[in-house]
Length: 343
Image (cartoon, rainbow, N blue to C red; front, top):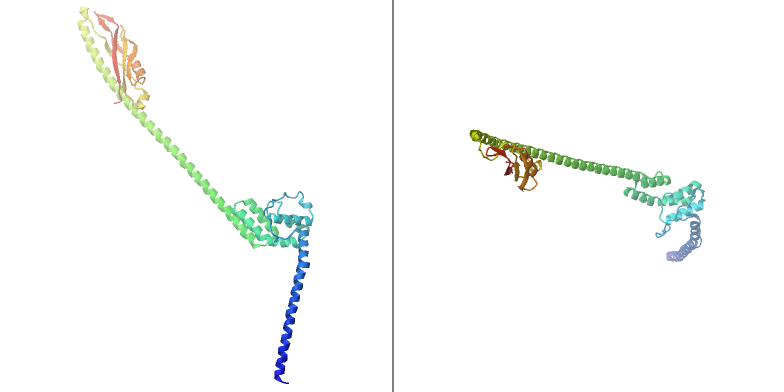
């Protein structure tokens, strides 16, 4: 046979087969598309409507969660799947307790083990449920996180994600315990520091008060010593005056002023000593014919009403040799300033 005829026959055969193959593929694609839109998809939509849906259906975010069914245990399989679908649409995967998609699907599996809709839904929503449990862990809502982890474990007990979630939950609990312990230790340290400050302040105030009291006692002793020296000097003067009186007693015509024979030093007021106050008091008093002192009155004082009582008490205890007029004891009046000084 002629070679050219053979090659021409082959090219013609290949050209005839190519349009046929394309036509066959187009027919098959058309039949598949028609089967999907006319048979498979309507069937799936019907199944979804009857069984409670599939987790891949878009979720309506603006729906408000309905209250949990009153008697979940008495619900039928279709009712459980419908409630699960509703919970999925309202994004109630794991919460609230008793009214979430996972619990409804698990109840459905209790009624019909191996239910394909519930099984597929739990498998496909497990990662989203794990995210919810992880968020509860991060928010340190430990009871809720533990409940959600336990619910996930019922759906897929062998899932490795549960191990990770449990580890995170344990770590967060330990971290919270450490933070609480540190806060407690810090509070105790602050309390101890405050208590020590109060104790130190009280000790310092007590020491200052003791030093002030000691200084006041020393100043009072010094005042008493000066008063004693003054009393001794006045006593010597009185003795000299008495001796002079004895020398002239025989003439019966002696006249003299009253002579101090007993001087009682004033007591320095404690309040004035503590505040380191000094001053003076001018008094007027009557010396009786028997040498006693009476009718003591404050004429002037600086500062007023601080040393008045001490001056009056001291002068009231003084004793005099009474004034004489022609050898006869008489009452007399005297005016005197009493000094109050610490040094």
